[in-house]
Image (cartoon, rainbow, N blue to C red; front, side):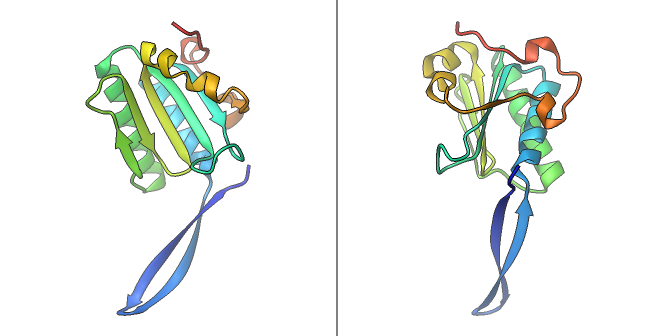
Length: 154
């Protein structure tokens, strides 16, 4: 997998700056997000490799929560893992109050935590059906519960 690069500008003195090159492997971000979602019993997990298909990200992680409380737990755990393992904050989080769809922007990785009916309504699975699907096992995640993977429209 090709890692994405994040370039940051560090201010040395007033008016002076230099570029620092930090490489972050987006596959590690995907793996951390997927593991965090599985830990909170997310269902119908799907990982899409959208590199070359869109300019705003490289990966989508889609999953469902059974109710608003579980959706919040999944989202919170993903954010905790991202901060803990990568030492970074998300670019943005949307929908935490809606109880239907939470979007977590982790830069080159976008995580969507859906209420089941909303996932069928927005049908991101269908919209990005040409994107290759990656299994948790391909990311090195073992012992994935059967109900964590798979997908069926409501």
